[in-house]
View 1 (cartoon, rainbow, N blue to C red):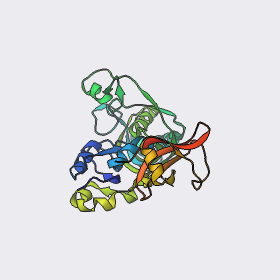
View 2: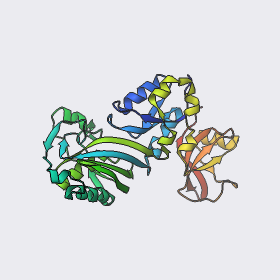
View 3: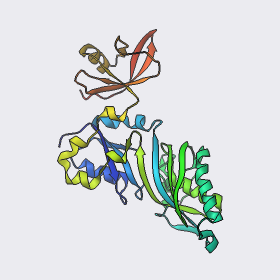
View 4: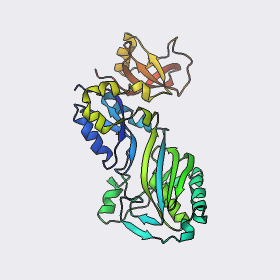
Length: 308
């Protein structure tokens, strides 16, 4: 199959890494391929597969994009990976009173999940792809080496408990890109004094796509001839960006790195605004930003998307 250019919204299955999912789609003739936002093997849900020229969008998709997750954590158990995939490092025997419906521990857990709204930074899991001196932390951890403590700034805009069946707590959370949900679960366990680990996780939304437009990996592999109809156009991935169509003369200049002048018909000029520059046939040419250049308003190229 010829190379596609756009975004395939995949519903990642449990048990496969993001890289393994990408490798399977790559076999469908998609040599130029990547993804935005890694999911752990245990997790399921929205994985944005970037095909062809869409691989150049990665940084812009993750920039300021929120994600929504549904997950389950278990109280009383802590692991080295902060989820159910790791080795148990501590267990706390919960009493019958703790496990009773409406117990003090349940109420405390509900309060701590709600308190995620106040979290502005979190510890980075030692078993993660975050790097130290060029090495992923998980490689250092697996080698038995000391893993340096790292902290990441995050923003949580929504957090709520969906149900509780002690010792399990089901929650939904919306947070900034790059947040570690297992870190939220682990830190909650520390604050409660009993430990906690993430046992299930589904990414329900990764800006700007949700599970409602996702396709399973089995579906994609079973009907590869339908891949072109399932691939979203690059413009769909940038809903907040202005779309600007240019003529042949401006297209030639843009390809040579010359900014596109802000012409009549482009709408208001707002410095800092971003736009997807399109050829007359609607094909994406570049990502651009409105700037002043020698006292004239122009669209400066951030990233070229053209193939010629």
